[in-house]
Length: 159
Image (cartoon, rainbow, N blue to C red):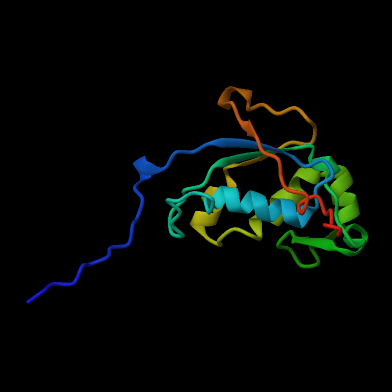
């Protein structure tokens, strides 16, 4: 009587996870394409040890958040809502206004929507650092500059 080989699912241990630091320059990048790439790095989907139930992702620093671009006039049409919890406490803010005053929150909100909901997504979102200008305070971590493709910049391939 022969036994069949048993294939076991690999589940990484916390000690197996090595976290890197990446810095992304958002100058001229399309918001949604930038957010999906950042969410992929935060979740760790680019690593061979990825597991959907564990936080295997890396730290991501986004600089020049005030120079991010929204396509097709979405900046003027799209509206962000928040509520104070009191009756009549609904606040509306257009993305044009948010990009000029609080561009860090625009990127954070876009990335948050692409992460899992619950404690896992919150822990992954804590690894995102967004800065308005070209300077960031995480030089001691020696982040690696990451260049995104032309698709993230909204450039179409012609010919």
